[in-house]
Image 1 (cartoon, helix red, strand yellow):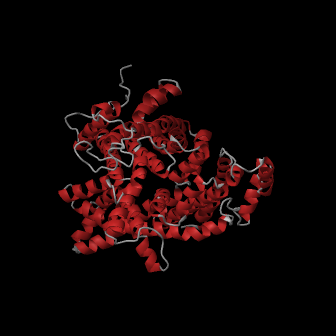
Image 2: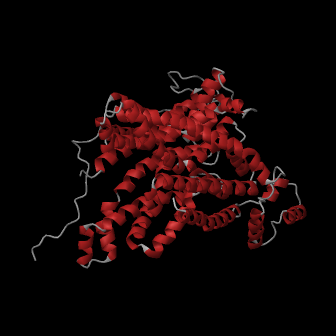
Image 3: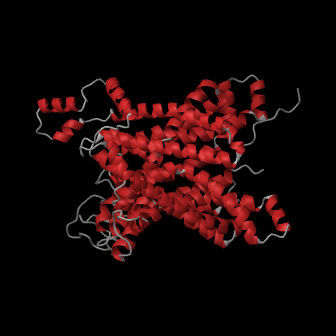
Length: 312
Length: 283
């Protein structure tokens, strides 16, 4: 992987991010309804509203407000939440780890489910085992995340009492326990997406000439499976995971709402209902940054694993 | 001049004899859904929104096969009437992205140059936002409701169609029949619309079916969050949200609408898979 490629890829992020900032700013300032009036309630006099607007800098021209916004960003300042009266950055910093924990946990569960099943389906392709696995995941793909979550929560949480019905817990082990159902919900959905592509890529590997050669060489099936098939499957999985990061974050927004998890996804939904501009703005920016960083990482890992990718 | 010019390849049509079972089952399910959407009264005698205080929270029985909710509304009727809303969501979340994205992709691939570069940058910008996050951010700006949701999804959803069609047109443009059409002096518009596009549209059509199932799921998710269809509209996602506080005491309120959602999702993905098999050029 040449350093010129890495540099080029890094530089591409800058104009993209400027565009992201403009888009978010314009979007958020198109919101109808005045946040100050919402905040102060019906009984606020126009005088009080005007004063609050001035305090929050909402009476300045949009261009000036955008200048403040970008200047703030460059100093790591995302503004202050209108409702909660704390800095948006600290709000996000508090809750982002929860969402990251959830998405990584879900990705791990998804991969643990999808990879062995994809290999099994590929090895037993066009048999009832294959049909069963594919049918199951076709169904999984059509199952809405919020619905699956709600049913798991009711059955395993509320009825059987096997899992807590919300929250995040204190220690690492506690997090694993509290977030198991939400991560499983998201992971099942992800596994359904991964399985489709992985099954066909495993079939491709299984029928490749070098696998025939390995067999002719007398290598054990186990060795062929771990050294060739599994390795290639994992390379494909990394790329697929990267491409699906947006869907995973979207899923986290819904899952956190269903399971009452104090992460950034739930914060986003709450902020939208509360018309808390700065929080919506900061979160959208954070999500976009997260996705572009994951895209970048995926590209770099891909280029490292497969030098041909650099040309593209 | 008798030399045969390479002609546009015959468009691949599904043959009924070799119809895959997936496509068949999907089509039958779709017909049932359409019937329920067009003539809900055929299936149920009750109104989806009328309260009946004499039958509050009754579990599934002969009179109310899916039970009733806390207002005594018949869940079966609400699920049936919801078909119309959720199929509408499937159509309206995909129609504009399909038409706009496909045409733009065709132009982009055919014309190249500045148009392609410009649209490419916009697409790069759109994809760094998680789809759901951007859609709910736009819905937050415009206000909750179905129409605003359609606008939001349209603003974002065209990118997939643009990418699929652009790639296909880039490939088809180099095919002999396309070169021949150009040599014959046909206008670029005719070459693109009459010759290339019909051969390049297949991936977009196949994706349309998958996208419809994604559209229903997205619409229902927004409904569940309170940003899509608004109560008392019998939209399946809204109905699951209505039932969420009754999951332990009256499981039927939220469970049946969710099953309907899953069934609709399965229907469209079966058709999508079947079409992908049927339309794939046999080489």
